[in-house]
Amino acid sequence: MRAVVIESPGGIDALDVRSDYPVPPTPPPGHALVKNEYAGLNFIDTYHRGGLYPRECPFVLGQEGGGTIVSMSPEGGDAFGLKEGDRVVYGAFGSYAEYTLVPVDKLVPVPDGLDIGTAVACMTQGLTAHYLSSSVGAGLAKRGDWVLVYGVGSGTGQWTAQMARLRGYKVIGTTSRCKVEKYNDPKDAASAFGCDKLIVLENAPGKSYAAYDSVDVVAEVMEATNGRGCKLVIDGIGRSTYDISLKCVAKLGLYVSFGNASGAVPAFPVLRLHPKSAYMTRPKLNDYVATREELLARAEEVFGWVREGKLNVLVDKVFPLDEVAAGHQYLEDGKSKGKILFKV
Image 1 (cartoon, rainbow, N blue to C red):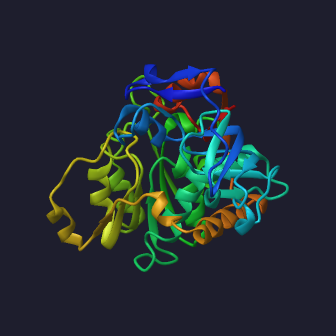
Image 2 (image 1 turned 90 degrees about the vertical axis):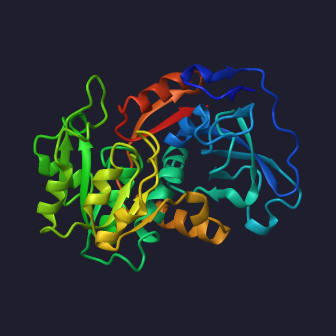
């Protein structure tokens, strides 16, 4: 089968597209074999590829996909109401391949009326945005509080801003100038991205992602919040924004660092949290979908919002799996304006 294999960590040249990779064996107990139609591309794939998040090599890249169950262990789907032929999406390693062996309890049925590509787009980014907007700040932020979300013009930030607004928060978003060029009025862009206030930054030289030193984000945030700052600061950028985030968080607020798009956040003194009695967390999705009940509850709410038209799901690009290198380059150059998928 075709699969994208990492023999050793590295840059884009570490992506090895093979046509003769062995098809996974007969599913062991508790597993199903899924014939993939799409695999999703996420920044975490670049962390696995490059070794920031170490994996044992060699391995098939990817951790998000969707397709059809072609076989499962005899007792596999009985407890979960699944069967061969069902359309499913999942978050599990090895999705950059024609076939993936997936634990049955990680499979999410795709509801009628929702296409597989959209359902795959809902998984890693949609579920991450769901826990970021509903669970991480629970008890610290309430309806009407200000929330700062970076990168609302694409990816997880785009989902998170919309969901935070559905939860009743007031949202400040940041994005690069190239992500708003198609809008005639900045207010139209803010509305499309789910923001009450949108901070537009210049593009980094020669790139499509934002230069966070091009605008005084702290001043903009403080002006919007009457000097109080934001109860939640949801930061998937990392190295380029952590200092801004610490300055923008409100008293008794929470700085949520969930990604490393610009590089990992360096160590900093915990005393920096002291002036505002602020909190910080570094969460990951797996801990917020640790049980099947939680996985399905989050997925069903996200799917429901999509079907009701409450969430704007933008699939920006679909690359053939053979063009995996072009997909990774597109993401890392900051060109994406929505979800990136690979057609398997």
